[in-house]
Amino acid sequence: MLVNISYNRPAISEKINAEVGKPLTLMQRVKLKGSGSPKLHITSTSIDIHNLLILDNNANICNVEMRNSGIIVMFRSLLETYALVIPYYKLNLYKGKAEEYSIHKDHHFIKVKADTPGIHKFFKKIIDHKNDNAPTQIEDLQ
Image (cartoon, rainbow, N blue to C red; front, side, top):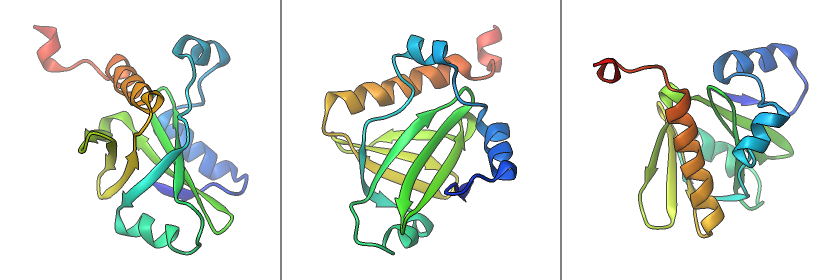
């Protein structure tokens, strides 16, 4: 779900919390050694996100917040903050080029540059957290 989160709207906050869970507690963030990404430079996006990003001439950057049941990719355009809310069961992460990750959900995608070791560590942390919090698969029960 792609939503504008610039304003404090309880209905949208409830939708986001229902989709990906409430924000991590302080103890959970300490155990994970952080739940937010460093600044990520966007290299390419799906058409609907691209249409939002081209409205201004600012650098296209985003950040990712980890939650218990998913992630939230946040970016800004025209003084507004937008969030792409992705539950883990719909999240697909691809590493295309050596220094690029692609975050996919249904028909939305964002490709980000990964030019520092911290970014690679963060995406590994997302994959590990997704695997730890995924529902039990049929194959695992045998």
